[in-house]
Image 1: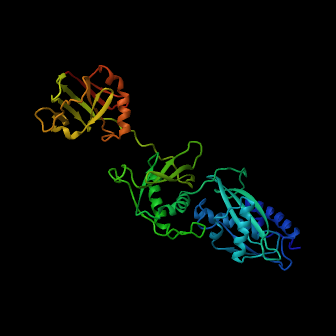
Image 2: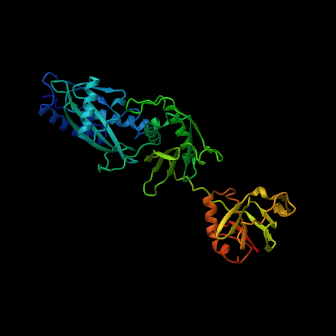
Image 3: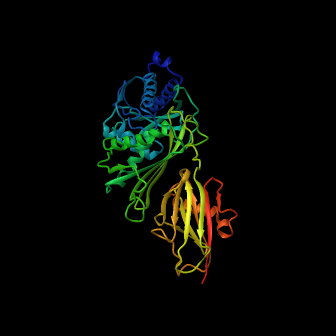
Length: 452
């Protein structure tokens, strides 16, 4: 038999989780030794190559990865079996192969054969079912008489990352990663999609403002520009990457008004999982979605409690005065429009036949008014004018403006929402010429009629 019958003092004094792993490993090794898994030419003490969690493991920080490897290594060294254990510095070559099924075990066995490893190679795999917990699986392979690794067994143990003590071993479909790990995984998946790009636009969306999210985009850029030298676990490296640029408000491609290639990072904070956040990574090229994946991210002690929702913008825009004339018009007439506003850039529009048409600000002359107001004026005496055309329908017309200090240049959907809010006033006689929406955005509506 290959057992000494003696426990090492280090194992006896070790953490409870290490003790449980050691006891389970003892039972597993007895099974291996008594099942004819090891070739007759293999002699005790058996050589063991320990492949710990690799440097690029996405689940854990470098510190936690090192602690978990040390925990399992201490358990291996403490078994009753006579073993000659040699830790392998970096198990990156085995990282892309999981141990979840028979096909994965066979792939691991083939990879171990190519590495020319020991009699009893042991490969540590891990998942992270909660931000505070690691579920470890130590896969034990045995080399038979032909030199192949056809026999394998596994030992599983869940541990708490705070104290490396035993934890609830319930299996979860959720698998948390670190933020840097999520970035590496996403970049490893998307790198082939970047091959023909010169520039890649980066867009981030965060639900709260605090130091953690302030650093999140910077950390992505760090990962992005390091990715040309990182081993993503499968022996793959990313070659030339396109230049990374933050999107500008006026940065549009020539076709269709959208950026050619856009990489988006969207962060949300789940309310039911402390110490976690969700990251959605999407990549669009030529308006088509090429990549979309969600990652559950463990914040690893970074507190989000100090993060606060962005303060709601308080509307301070004010419409002081607004007038439209004449009340009765015919084709060829010029309207007289005058608006006095404070702390906003107004959006003018005309409504006829149920259809709203934006009016360019370039039509209006701007004049300074009293008490910090700005006067927008378009009439027969200004450089430009609003002229009633033959195509304008006969009947009542509405001409108005919206004044928002929080949204000075509203997108089309925002303007559409505002017009929907005031649609009753646009359809009939406005009760007041100047009013405010529920969110404090000011608006004013004037009327005139076109006759034959």
